[in-house]
Length: 416
Image 1 (tube, rainbow, N blue to C red):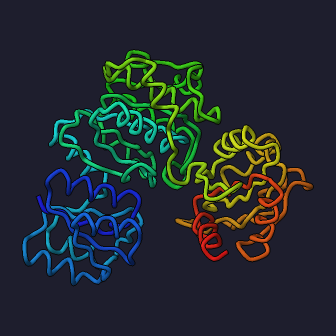
Image 2 (image 1 turned 180 degrees about the vertical axis):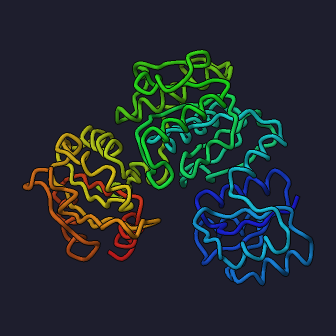
Image 3 (image 1 turned 180 degrees about the horizontal axis):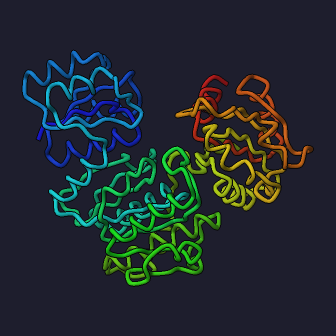
């Protein structure tokens, strides 16, 4: 099968293209500009063009016709490559339909990690632990990893471990052997207009799974006949952060149901050595951490983890997506930010917006938080000076958000 990936440098499409290549398919693709991901894929032997006019797609199709055109959700309907692919009669779809096909073609058992928060970390923990135990594993994670590529196919594996995202109803393409549910809190209002529609999607996902492992607080969504309920984090896990310990508990429970025949002490030793995944409380420099979290529950959990490491935590927070802020504004309370000694609040990063919704200001979003704690800021030299001063005085600075904040922080570190 010959496959073209449009947006091949994306965090979802990039790993999938590597998986397809390693699984024996003929792969090439395009993106707007080079990146770390495209560099890695080109090194792996995937031809990539940074001209998305359609010329590359046409020339490659003329050499040997494509069977499938995979595109990112960010690609507009009038994108030249998507328009051309349909004109040429190539099958077009988003990434999850192809991944489901690869899993079926290779007769793999899918271990899916789903939920509102903690998917990336839990998926990464399970992959890390299996690798440490020398269990062959194919996988895809929605972030960079310090210990390997974001996605890979191992011809000796029985299992495919996948971060199964609910956005755009992606996770409903799959019928997992085991589904781990990290948490269920209403999110993605652009896909699910009501909380009930969000919960219904998780119910449907549970029905499509042979086995569901969930925490007690999320368990009422799922049918009891295929459900294992967890109540407390495993006491043998020594990772910092209660949410990390809960994520690791899910991973260990999955290994039990997968039939992994290994001494428990070896499993705990492996998981307790987990080095972390990119953008999940990732240490960038001394006293400086980056985290992808952008939901109040994630903020609270990550601040709790930071507080275990420092008595003085400074949070730099960039809200994500105005439509989401309209849904969660009431959740921004002192309880959520209890473990932050100071907060630098940035304007909301805007993406996939409803033009009819007024953009909420930083002052509106932070109105229920102690005024003494909150400073309103921009990504500029003044903020970098405040971050530097806090770090130099021994404070832990935590930068959170799914927008531009991580890239900006890394740029400042490179320059200074």
